[in-house]
Length: 98
Length: 149
Image (cartoon, rainbow over all chains, first blue to last red):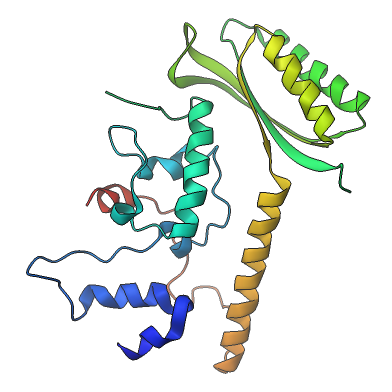
């Protein structure tokens, strides 16, 4: 499993999958290895009009979910952020919910 | 080339407007597009939708999406017009050609890469239907709980 690390960026998604059953349930509690949704599903263009695509990244409060929680890669988080902000302007998704 | 760009225009018409008024608005925009030698690529009417938050005193609105190719001046004029109109409660112009080009390029690069690696492994370049993990394209039911934790 360690060898696969050498594969660089490309092998990342496979890597993460392996981590799930793998050797490192860090410090007692088991944390699920997350994969960037956009990489996994090969979504190149984050469409701001697609509410169903954006909705999982907006927790109850309506804030943008940090990528440390959602597991989105940096590139896609950036695109997602822009898409969410556009969708907010169009009242497709809320700025705040309470 | 440099003056021709693709834009996406989304506008929300007040719910009080009749279908006729919405259609009129569309022809009006079409007129501006023609005057500035732009081309109309696509138009899409989403119909009436509930707004995520109130705009003015409205709780819902009619969404219209138009894809337009033209110059920046054209979009500036449309933007100005829509701002003036009371029946349009919100609008947004987004330039999309570059984003779509980037998306195309990454997709092509990925496909070329996968083809190359498959050939290197002695497989046919294209993935046969049903082979591998498959794309969970329409499968978003994993996201809710997954995203929470």
